[in-house]
Length: 271
Image (cartoon, rainbow, N blue to C red; front, side):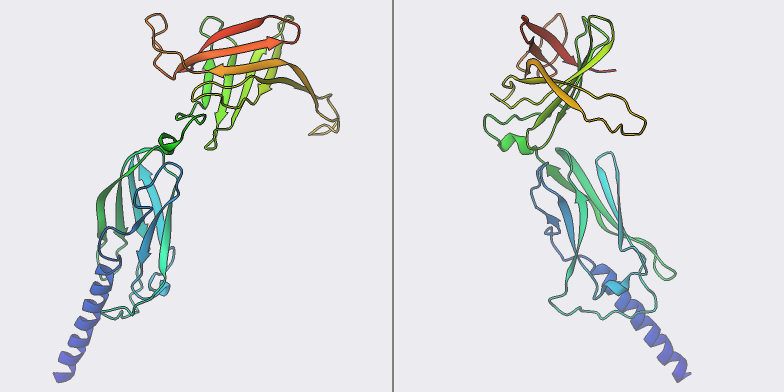
């Protein structure tokens, strides 16, 4: 009987120690999110203090998923063959869980510890709110504050359009697809630099070509021809005619070598 009582006491102590370790999975307080005030240019991480060792997990320490703006970190299943001490020694390494770069907006973070044969799943963080601010708001001229990436077009001339790639360093690549006088499609590209917060300097308008060959890619070199210049201006404002809202409308201005200057009113394409 005494042996049974002793075995039961040891079993209970093991459960209590494991339960304490699960409760101590994160360092107390709100200092687990880094940076504490993230922007859209930051890589957001969760800094997690472990029980005592990475070996406490069976496999796959964590998995990150997101539904709309609700982020969930699912932690791996704990080993049941390890008895954790009630208090972990100081100075242990932490695990950095990468949430990645997030667009500006409001988010919630939840963290769930997987269950096992002894314990059910435990939510260690529930809907912790945090905000990612727009990194561009801290920029000064000539840097811009908005991302103009996307498909732009002239509603008065369907069949041609403009693809714009705008990266975090404010570099712009524009690919313009249009038709020539013979009715065949033509592609032009230009890479303008910003003049103001919403308008660019004129940049060389380039047309590329390459003769076909028997292999892919063809062995023939690509030729680049400058055929004029082009620039973008997104300072258009809303008007009753187009219904465009600010920064969803603008102008494409281009000049072919030896020809007149043409201005096109463009809008962000919205299917």
